[in-house]
Length: 297
Image 1 (cartoon, rainbow, N blue to C red):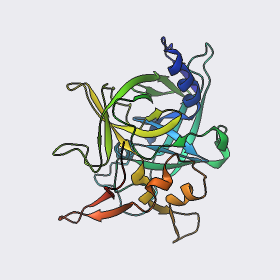
Image 2: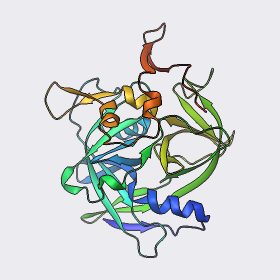
Image 3: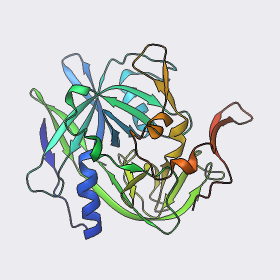
Image 4: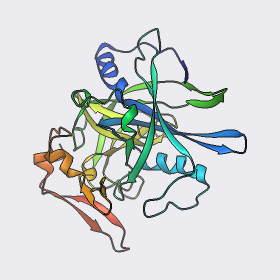
């Protein structure tokens, strides 16, 4: 892989600490497919590695990459794609000598309750997957008025150069303040899932990037509006309701088991446990519900 990063700009001191900590876990997500003698690329968005051989991105990012297959609808059950899905990492954005890596996605599971997709990467390639290096999660949104940091890879470009990929990337690191939290969804507006709002807009391609608060991962970038100068970030607690395929055929795993076993450390799982459930609206569409007894502040 050829690495052509942009020079990173000035960062405030607290932000530098977050950036050095988060950069080795952050990634850009793209797909590639063979068309006759050429490779066609689809630049998807951003994401964050969260536990061994696994990470998260926005669901709409994964579906955008999936469009390389020419599918108009996403298959309901497991299937094989005709394209490859790949993560690229920019491990040291504050250093003069860039260092990067590629990880290949082997499986993915969409949450039906929020704009988040769980990704599994190839075990043999994961050089940065040390359990002590991952972020603790804050499942509930940060309080209104608190500062958070958003990290992503908007405007990156992938091309085919000889036998290698060329990745031209910009790492964007955005401090912002939380301006609102939504228990179930924004009333009469998107996003239609639990989220929180910050006072900065971000560029396309930032979707799926991690949001950090007091040394925890607290959400993923989901929807942004340059007109309103706001971004809405998906809260993490609905992921506790996800069930996904295990390594054994026909056997599913509860994502919440990762919290119970402390594979993923959490700041507030005891507060969330037993207070969330999956429900259906009048149209039979599922949504994530959290008890009114849980104080989001």
